[in-house]
Length: 178
Image: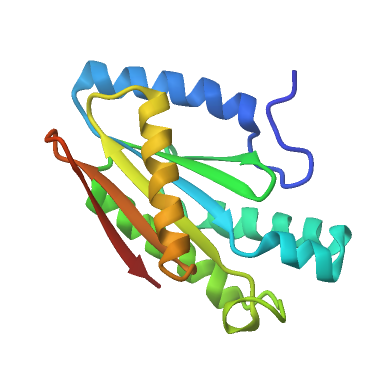
């Protein structure tokens, strides 16, 4: 079966599932952190409703290229997770490094100034949730990144939030913007 998303040209969910299993296994075996970014295009339903799905497809492809272009290392992995969501795996990357990548990605999409009348600053933007772990499951890491993504959206979009699990009974959420 194909492992690339036909529309955006980045790996698809099937490829991501395989990459997550492999990179999570490597992280656990080597005792190194794995960071995950869950990325959502802000207000994308409104974009499609006002400009139409063909324009939405153009925007999805452009955002995929901008996000992929923000990755610097060969082991970093981006995939289309579904709809207007993308996911990134950053092997051997602690939370601070994931934040650098998230900041670079939000800035790249914002600075591209893809026109959207109803968007933040009248342009397409993204929100990003981050999670990092050394010992975790892939499902837990994704769940934590997803929780952080919703925090970034509630904080106003066009930014990022991180889930930091310090092993205690609570988790710390941190929010930043471009």
